[in-house]
Image (cartoon, rainbow, N blue to C red; front, side, top):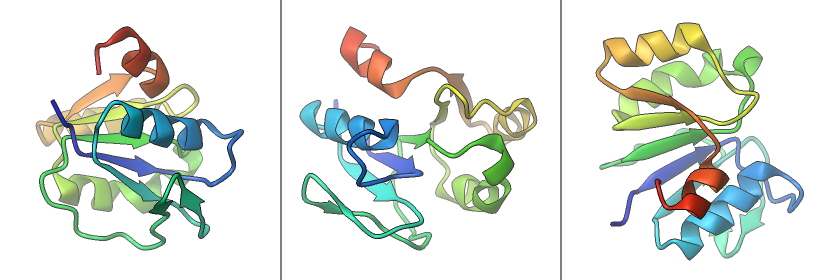
Length: 120
């Protein structure tokens, strides 16, 4: 099943996990919307620099540390995803609680691992 996924913290640096996750999501046939703070291309997808309205978001996968998440909170809530994946290093109990209050499931997990074991 295709789960439209917004990658926040996308980077065109192949060493970054956000890059690897974008590629892996594409390989698993998920529609990917990469959003970051620098221009670039990941496997044919242009990294979006602003905060576009994206309809029907299933999952947001976060690659932005807790110290930089405040700038993204309202945007994430506005997309009304079913869940937000907090990849290792992005865990934020306060924000996770806020998501639950909006009926959005916070998941502390690694997107790459979830894809590799088939529980994405």
